[in-house]
Image (cartoon, rainbow, N blue to C red; front, side, top):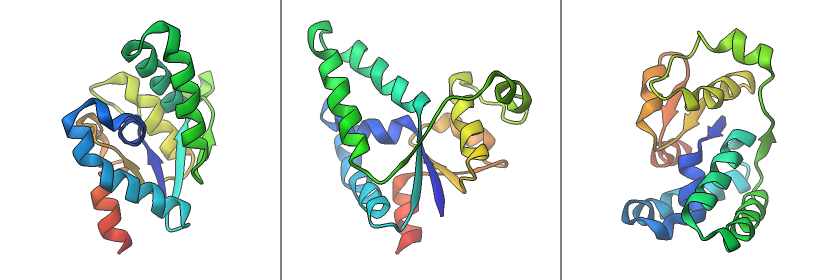
Length: 149
């Protein structure tokens, strides 16, 4: 199985101390990344997600330390056995934008990349992805872990 990991999952792994809800989600998110590292699940993370992690750092932490925190976050992501994929070409965005209609258009590149990289589903905590479930499956980390057992 191959999964696209959305930014919401990555941020729980990296920054769960910032909200109560994320602290509750941390054990299942850590277990998901452990399953990836054991080879039970192939995982894809895009540069779009990395850019969103960068924006989170810039918006959450003081300017004098946000760059350093982002670099540590990037290093933590790279410790896991994930496939990093780049940005879409202009042609790819134009070709696939009508195929995946989302309420939040900023999520569209994630869905297109999940499709183009052959992912079976998107792992997310974001409800915006529900509208494309007929095109590509959407799961939470807990749902993925249940299937792996």
